[in-house]
Image 1 (cartoon, rainbow, N blue to C red):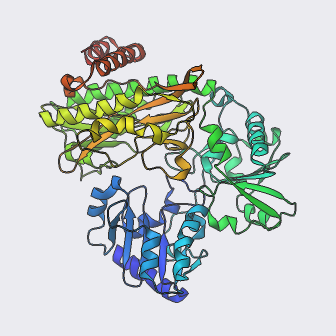
Image 2 (cartoon, rainbow, N blue to C red):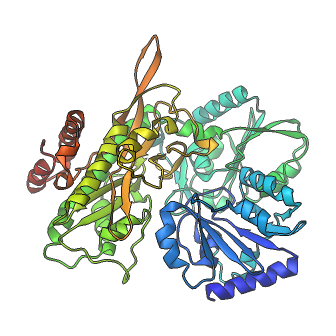
Length: 594
């Protein structure tokens, strides 16, 4: 079926159900970022491949809301589909819920698969819908009805995440959760995020791409911990779970369990992490307490074992990326290399590294103008051939038993012009500005975002993305709640705590020209305490050469030059043990002081 045919079939279902507008989100029942094929409803019906976006279909129109990362690719992918792209955040572009309210008649019916709509998002939509007396149905999976060859629900398996990697046992983590529950005044706690349950119960899994988890819920009381996950997924770890006092129930039992729960008390939930379809099953005898997800907050603060492992993990990862840079700079002069070859080479260099599982996300390899698309994905037969000139942007990462990595380097393949050098150096200045931050404890990411944007704002430039996101530990490459951006959601206004790991990735993106991004992972650490309070700073934990051929030293201050030289000295120290003599000589030149 073409996109036009799919929309026609969907409208037939809408007509039968008396639905005037149908909303299709990029989500599953756990608000997971990287979705298995079963949950790729928005992608299937629209043809838009970006990792985010929300769609509305009415009797005569279809609209897809896309953020700035995907405007370029979205325009191309939606061409000829009859779907109109709404550029989120642009002047004159209404949020989805306001558009629906303004374009439907009073008492019209809006449909959505309630399994995929977070409670908080549902409430935000309802605030607008009530102004027009719109009615909402949460019981409609209409895309699933017309998707005849829909992939099967994931059937992966969980495996043990050893204590030498986790640093804390299940009972220790449950004790920390219950301590936090007491502070929140909660008797019970419903854990929905897949990464949260994987961390809490010290397992990893194979249900989801880019994140080693399985589909599961957890219900925690003061004395019991119940894990809702199918037995077929737990065959290798069930005995260990039971030994630690964990009660096992099947995944789908969560609905009847909640409906039939008789005890009274306060149930803690995060309305941004739990979908409306499951909240409907909570009985009246449970009083809902709302707040930021407890497990997410705890797991974002890496323990000493995790931190030590992360540093070793990043050293191995960066050695592979550095060897790749050397290879491509040399090979492009004499070989036919395409963007899709980059991923294969990185996989080859990583596959034998200690504790390696898989890539943490599909590698972005973007040559010249393709680099202007922040989340560009090269496709075989449709991608660019590399030339011994210009910029290549590579954003890549790995999942290891002892950490998750995410690093971007933009490097020179040959001749570049002065404007390219300027853009590269502005990006470097932005990166250094955040790296050198010292801040009072209690600061949130948005407090610090301006340090990265100032060099660009000073010359009338900006980048349409966040400056940094939290990074999981042997889990999701995008971890909430920490983040650094100037326009956060309320959930993003969290204090930066010791042990949090965050990316630092400003960039320049010029449509039709090139993209530049420099990304490292930084660790929040305590600096000192005095009469004014506790001061914090960032330690960089990823070390990989920054291409000096693209640096305009005249644009850097003395302290920025010192930062770059110190960073490169540490890069050589960290990476040289992984290199042979030829690679060491090359690395020495790439990390020379300027």
